[in-house]
Length: 440
Ligand code: SDX
Image (tube, rainbow, N blue to C red):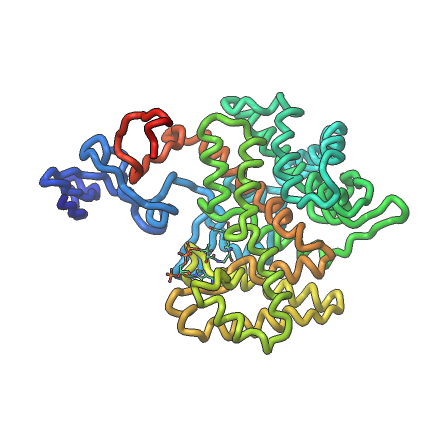
């Protein structure tokens, strides 16, 4: 088969690409976005040529159009609704970023006050939810508890599961953003055998989460504003990231018409993997395994050896072929938190030495592997008092707004239909059944 793709300009000024398959010419529209690469619309390729396109892992394939987040991986740029992540991390708050991602614009003061009030008043969960937790073993991984408890929300909130009702979609979005910190804190408390702490409507979003995690009924708990601000900034950094694996999972689940709570539970399950959101937990365990800086060269050698099965966790990214802009902010936040706490964590020195060695090593340079958002986050989260098992849960809390904003955008997209990829079949050709007595 002979297949050639060309992209000549069309007479009407529109752009098109041509695929020639077995001397049959198929013209495909080329679409341009606001910024970033054009896309070749291959939606009619199979109907017009009888061949599928093939792209495991979607390395060159866009599965949707979106207005929410933009990444320029070569330049290390990340924009939420057009605003650079560095500016939002410095000047905004997670709850304001939630409004931005969900509604498309930064809120004016009235809108902001209303949004915060709505979210605050959705932070409690149905009291019967607490019974779910008692069914888990105390040593259950908090991400396992989150998968179960978030999926169970659809058993309680029937009045916001009709995905075709825009009012119910918005209520479900508010409920998810509001209740994730509460469920995450409950998962943490359950794992350490302490009583659940109710949300406090007197506190801001992230301070409320910290008090639900670290307060105990026996004494007052005062949230440290510096630490709350640091965690709030970490939430901003993790809020959304285009069509990453867990967001694509949420979109695919939502494309069948599944309710939003079930879709977010699917996203949590996908995020748990060590290649994705589970990398923050894996990266800290890697730094702890390396321990002293003198062990770094041997570890880097293993990370470069395919047969070792060991990767440099917190390094590399499918899109960023430059420094992840979030990692820069995260490293700065790490220094601030450790300084505020008066903690001299040798793992930070190990991480920075490892970063320098890797960034000057030909293997990492040639493959364009840089630190990503997960490389430093574990050091900060541990300093804030969270066990490694909670790191990916915190990522899920932050990413909930991105998941739900992308889910809502997908439901409201007139182009959306159920996602159903095709395949290249390489299995057995058609053959007849044989009785067991006649088999070898
Ligand atoms: C997140 O998609 C997102 O946006 C995700 C995320 C988000 O906000 O949602 O940014 C969050 O998931 C960040 C990534 C966290 N994961 C890790 O830190 C785990 C370690 N990194 C990887 O395993 C890897 O880099 C990925 C999964 C992140 C990206 O994998 P790709 O794009 O599929 O690249 P690849 O596995 O094909 O690797 C390309 C080459 C390979 O070598 P060759 O086969 O070409 O010889 O680079 C090598 C890999 O072996 N490589 C690494 C490496 N990452 C890639 N070698 C050593 N250490 C690494 N970390």
